[in-house]
Amino acid sequence: DVYKRQGINAEYGKIKMSTRSVLLTLGFFFCISLLVQHVKCHSYVACTDYTGGAGGRYDEGRCRGWPRGWWGMRFGDSNNQRGFDHKGTNCQFSRGAGKNKPDARYTRGQQVTLAWPAMNHVTSQCHVKNKFGANRGANHPDNFLKLFASRTSENPDATSANLIHDFGAPGGNGRPGTGFQRCGDYCGSDPNDCVCTGSFRVPNHLQDGTYTFKWLWEFNKGEWYTTCWEATISGGAASGGGGGGGKSDNPPPPGQHTCAQQKTWGKCGESWMRGYCCASCGHC
Image (cartoon, helix red, strand yellow):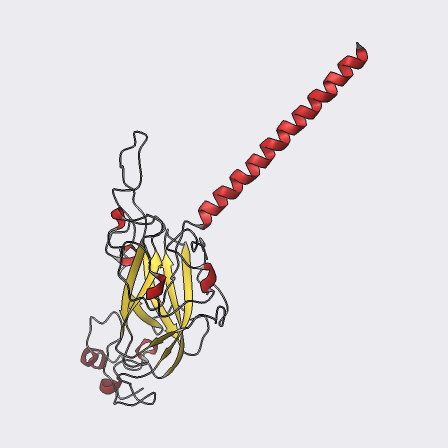
């Protein structure tokens, strides 16, 4: 009887250990699944010159320019979704990563469209259900979305001198059709793969050369996501020295004051005026 009890206890111990191992394994994979979901819950620029529209499925065939490390930043179908997530204000990869896809080529004065996945970050009354299965909607923050560029730095600073475009993030809760949330028919699309777009015009004062662009998005306050890429600029109206044409007279962003006003106020010598109001201020 003693030996039998010992044998039963040993078997019980094995079963207990086996159960514990199964639970630990399940817990491990559960944690991994949460990590994967978290990784997939933020956004990035997937295309740096997109000729498709906002909303619906992303069409990779309409992309003419790619970011650094493009292989981890594709989306649009289950085979391509990589769930890239780069937090911080520095560039996601060093310059030259992913050179088997072409960098963008821009022309001064060209309107360029960027594309990024919604990743379920659009304020809406759809896609989020309550416990009864009805749409309850959700608010998603959108505090800052701007584009910067530099010809001399591989990791452009987010300064007014480098500012190319402000996409108009409203701050606080985002609003569909503004800032990050320009996502077309979001409610009629997959909430993760729905394509969002933002357009900017290449400034006429930029001279010929290769520039590093930085897309900088603040989701929650102090929570930044960044995408960098290179683009070659040539052609179009030049502001002297770069590729022909005379001096331009474009005011600095956001552009609510004219060059004449800036000159009258004595702002021509300010650092944030470099490359702007060339004719009025007599520099560049």
